[in-house]
Image 1 (cartoon, protein in one colour):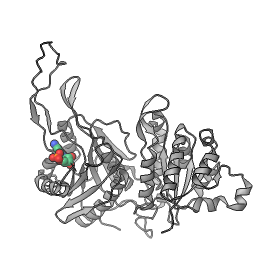
Image 2 (spheres, helix red, strand yellow):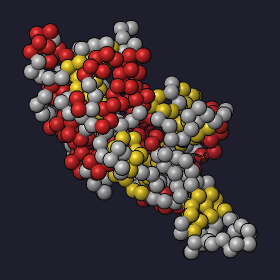
Image 3 (tube, helix red, strand yellow):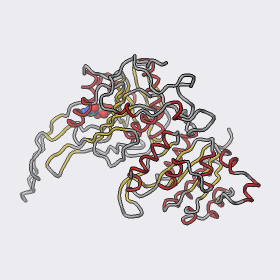
Image 4 (tube, rainbow, N blue to C red):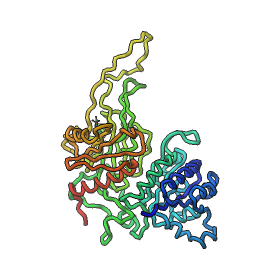
Length: 455
Ligand code: C5P
């Protein structure tokens, strides 16, 4: 197989320095890398460094006529298997979403017919700003893959989501995009643009959504057009999907709680992928500092009992994906005031009570979703434990998650989908890729269990 060709567009942000390491990693994996750097990007890294590491010419200006003779900008934009924008600043994302082509980078992004992966990096407030949320939703709607930024302390001293993911994680996302079954390019590739085929219908997000029914029609279909244009792959359009994610916190007193190390990343990636695939998504999230993926309706909860109540309130749904790491036990009694040390060395008694099993309860409920999926984090005998859990919980699939090598909070996951039909084992993939692959499988399963009537 020919070496994958990456066109790497480097925007102007402090995180641009990580692009240097990314180029090194991609070259180490024998990918061909051609770099384009914006004028602002040049303030942070030099074209010379990028040229030396990529062993390729670096492009900076639209008006470099010599480059037009050697290679036109249209050719440059298409002579790649994947276009990667890293770091994608708020400004660059906004210009991409608006279709502005006022420099070499944005002109290439508008001219390309190849999949685009954008890796955002910006201040937390900028990432959470309504304008950026809107731009990211637009880009995802156009078929651009926008990675979730990392959260943590930022160069500016603030804390939250907005950090450029580590180069290893970007590389994993690039590899996933190169092998992705999903078409990634937006409004390109010869297919009709998204808005012509499936106009966004806000009523899908209204609260009085019709109950899941085999006779429900797909909305937005236009006669004579294919149901899904290649650039607008929405296999879950018309479906209502519930996702639980994150840990739960069980209070001991007003300042202490029982918790676990769940980061919520896999659940949020699943909610994001379900929305990308066109579903109406309800996300019941435990306490995690992650931003809500575009198109997802989120309810925040603290405790298992609150989560159980919100899950019940969200029914009926076509599929429920229970990714949350729900605390098995809570404090039997919550102290109304902070428990104090009395200096005697005596420890306070901590009696525990069992929490409701939300997944098992849902399996037995009158409104059991037609497709009910549980998760299981295991360190050993992964499949045997998952098979036992499948029977115990009464769900349809268990996504067994091997956490022996990469504990909770990592960027990748190796999963086995265990069902009565057998075991489907996947390679280790970035959590975003696991989520997208899972959506394909869910869409197929729902189509066979609960076909939607098409025009
Ligand atoms: O029993 P265990 O916690 O290993 O099961 C994991 C699966 O069950 C996950 O899908 C999790 O979301 C779900 N679960 C639940 N309510 C609980 C415990 C687990 O929904 N109280």
